[in-house]
Length: 293
Image (cartoon, rainbow, N blue to C red):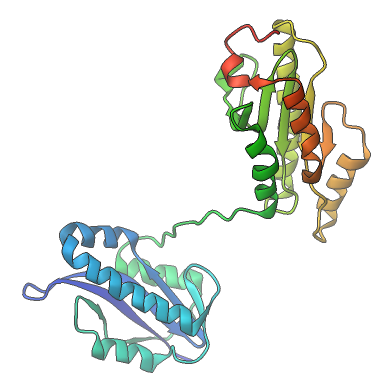
């Protein structure tokens, strides 16, 4: 079945025929590919801020209609339920004669996929297909923020990246979910086994955590701290069906890890209570001072 495309055009000045190609819509069988150029939108806004409000209104109406008539599957691909077809593109071409217009639908004889849509977008709009990524906060991350970040805010360092230049023996940056000190070191690292991260990345995080712990312990000795540190790896049970992920999680749970304790997100109160009971402070503020009690 043939596919059809139409180019969304912003008419900045109809007298001089000043037109900017803003985006591309492609209808292929029951799928609709649609994307706008954020760079071209910014250009349109700079050229005519007053007209841009009307353009934005027109685009929002179009996007709302597309979302209403389709199942939104991702940021650029929609699955058509009923009204989005060749005739729909022709109506857009015929009846939109204001600052937002649509080119006459043209046929595409090749199959349409993400890659081919990318090629057409680059050809007609004149730039690479770039999407604004929206950060999706997982339930695991939400629990960490609620049960670790919130109670320890302004107490110890939370959501904190230790830079390699801060410790002489450290040769890479490392992210902690919690890091504090008061006579001993208190550190927590959360790893989500149920995210989309590769198993190798998770293994590397665990290995890096062990390496950083060793270097922190060396620093602690040089500062005269006690050896009664508390290092915690926060992981929840793996819920997927990949054997390799499940094996790694079981190893962590079953084996007595020599450098850190294992706890689930439901058990984070234990770490929080220890930090508060020991009156720990921010590691970052004590790093260049005498961090001994």
